[in-house]
Length: 292
Image (tube, rainbow, N blue to C red; front, side, top):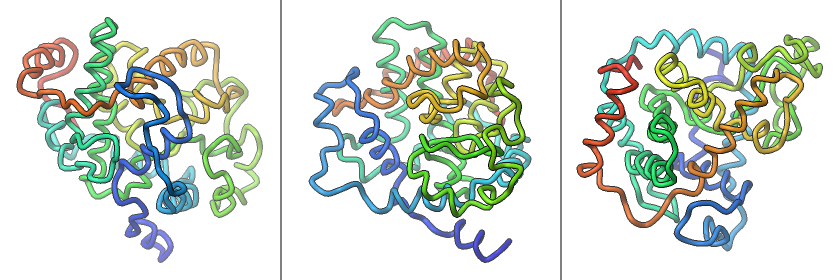
C-alpha cells in the first residue's frame, strides 16, 4: 500500500456518519414527512463543517475505477459473516450518531423510523422492507473500512467526472482525471449502456444491493443501489449512460428519497413492539441468514 493510500485509509475526516447525512439534507432541502418544517432541519449558525469538505476531498481523490473494482472483489464474495437481518441491524447499531442535531436515534431506530414512515403511507410491504434495509450496508465500517469508502454521494468512475457531483473540484486530484481513457464523456462505457454496466464509487449502496439481490422486487433493489446517487436522481447527471429501463426505475429511487432524508422525528420507534411485524416481513422476503 502506498503512503498516500495508507494516509487516506487512516484519516477520519468525519466525526460520525451523521455529518455526511447532515450535509446531504442541507444540499437537498425538500418538504417531506417530518414533524417540523424543513427549514428547522440542520439549522446551523455556522457554515457547513470543514470535516465534510475534507471527507469529499479524500473520497474524490481515491475513488478510482481500479479502487472500486478492487473493493468489489474484496467484499462482494460476502464471506465475512452470516447473520440474521435483525442481528445485522443490531451489529450496525454500534454506529450510534452522537452529533446529529435532529435526532439521538441509533442506526437501528433510524432504519425502523424510515420503514415506519413508508408503512404509514400505505406503500407495498417490499417498499417498507427496503426502508428497513437501506443503510444496512454501513456495516462495512465495522469491517474496517474508512468512512470515505462507505458513505458519501456516489458517482460514476471510468468516465469523466460530472460537475453535478458535490465538490467536483476535488476530482482534479484523482488519478483517473489524468487518464485519457477515463476523461471522456463516455470513458470505458457506451452511450445508453445501462447503469448495470457502470461502476459507481464504492460504498454501502452497492454492498447492500448485492447482499439482498434476488430477494426483493427490482424497484426495491434500485432504491438500495442508487439512493446515494444524488447527481443522477436529483441533478439529472449521467442520463447518457442510462437506458430507458433505468430512467423508468429511477422514479422509484426518487419516491424513496424523501423517506430517507425526512423521516426523522424526536419520538423513537419501539423495536420490541415493532419486531414481530418486521420479523414476519423479513421472513417473507429474505433468507434466515444474510451473507455479509
